[in-house]
Image 1 (tube, rainbow, N blue to C red):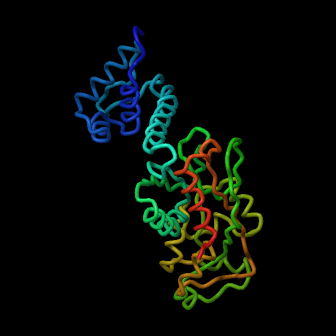
Image 2 (image 1 turned 45 degrees about the horizontal axis):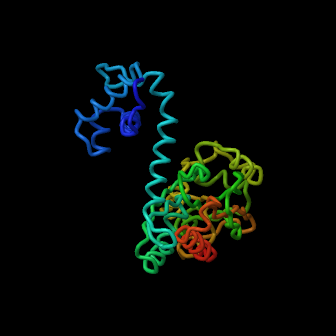
Image 3 (image 1 turned 135 degrees about the vertical axis):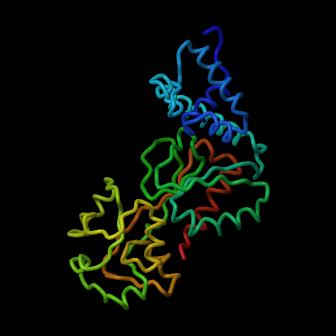
Length: 293
């Protein structure tokens, strides 16, 4: 290579890999399709190797392109972090803060907290990532994370909140139609809402719920938000946060003696604790999430 390829070329590579086509990458980047094609040609020329194979089915990434993907993703994260960091003046509560939270927390609780935060600090901009995946805080994929697992990475500032209580619930109409189970074993005769893909955390939880397991679920989904919607829709019996269900008088607690505590943490990189905007958002989340009602 006569010179290092421009970052823009790697950004285009990542867009083509994600979208699977030049036209899709062009829409995502707000480029023209010929510009995307020129970027890929230029990067291939710099690297001295093909990145995609053209066929009737479209673009097929080569082994080199697949190998470059994680490095391009790191570059993209670093670029986004740089822009967020530079978006606010030092010492001012302004600029962009990227928050990661689970689907349920992000939909059921954060809107009210963030609305209050925006009223108090109108120069703040929030990027909200809803996922049950544990995002990387050390690599700054996000600035602040609301996690339902205890953080294990070092160099993090973490605040533990009271555990979230989970329990079985169903729509009152469903229980009125089929009756109320009185034991875990009774659930085999009901429509149970549960997970699709088993994870280590779910396996640990399942030991407390034996003989209930995936084979007995009438609806399987790994989206906790979809499970909550199915409970509210009257599909059957599922597990959700007790505090959320208690706000809806149409939902009935089933087997109330069974309680599943879920760890609850707010976490950010310790390097951000001296920055006004990150600290304000961190503290606002901590205060707001202490009241899960």
